[in-house]
Length: 114
Image (cartoon, rainbow, N blue to C red; front, side):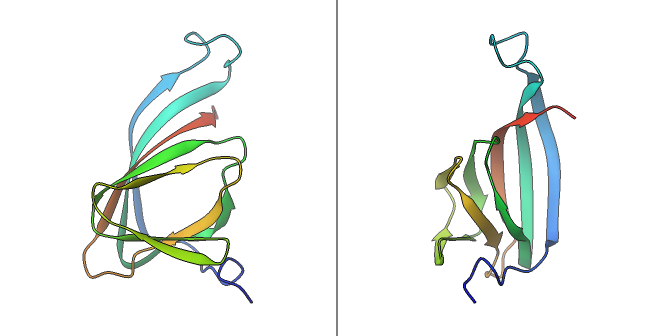
């Protein structure tokens, strides 16, 4: 069984919505979508799972504090403060905090409005 299949459920994660912009009035063809910015905190031992994709929900992540381990394609990559990564239609992954300090990221993505 590979990393992705063994991803545990979400635990130890807090998500705070920071801002949204309705993209319909801003960009032609974007009706029903919004630009969203969130602060995600993953406590030590926490997991942002299960495995999920970003099809129809592209975004970027920037790490403010701690280290987040990103599991994708059977590879675990650690990202620390001041680093980030893209999440595009080809991204299928799950995240965890293997450290002793809470990990905090800023996540910006485009989502369908609820």
